[in-house]
Length: 349
Figure 1 (spheres, rainbow, N blue to C red):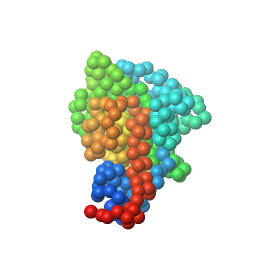
Figure 2: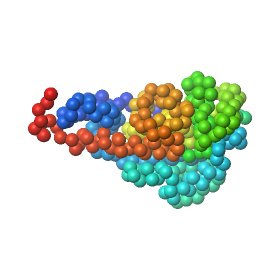
Figure 3: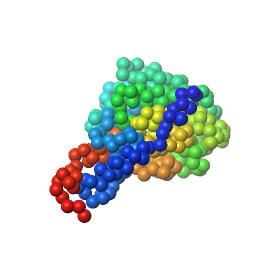
Figure 4: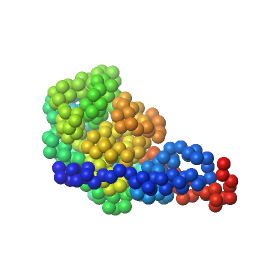
């Protein structure tokens, strides 16, 4: 718990001087003021995080946290639980959608076993297993409070390692069959929502599966009675190991001055947990896209964030975040590659 506390205390507000300097530079470029819209606000945000104008694309990594969920016993997923471990091997072989999109964006994929039920062996896999999957949250707590804290601290430690390697931009990805169920439960608790508002079809449930999933989330909250004002209590009782790990990744990145691109529904719920731990961490978040999963819009609303893209995706893995990387690169490149009014000899309005 000391690492979590120290990390929260290390997160600082954005650098106002760096943001104002970047605004001045943007104002000298050959364009009407503000005409590049969110590219300009991104450039300013990146400057505030870095403490200086960022005029070249940073090194990028997508962190895919993988874990299993005991709640799969309730029939809440259209896919069997063993797919989690199988997909981890697919990530490591470079054959998943996130591998394709990360390669396109010049980013590496870091795959982490934080709680996969099966034993997955691969030289490139980071094994940081807290436990072999959560318990069935519909019948009791998903994990202990200590396990939840350890999972958060796994994410913090990984952010520190990647920042030390020179990674300047992180994206949150995840893999865990059944993980939209704990995500929906956490969102319902944090947002004080009826579970029906937070529960979606996940990997493609039919109407009966959706009803069963709603009843499962409702029962989990009634059984565990998580305290919405105690983040670790919510994670431990109705959360997931990979969700906790991603929350820690966000906190660790913010403490090291590294921005984080959040992906879809599960990643955004992890971001809510991170911001509940440390409200200032919100300033380090870059929302990528709007997922088709029902609760995602509500999760973004909880954070007060607007996504950049809407491609009707619902895959997870960090795929939406990877698609936002070129937009972020563009925000950096306009600062270094566009001419100013003075250098181009163009009269200002």
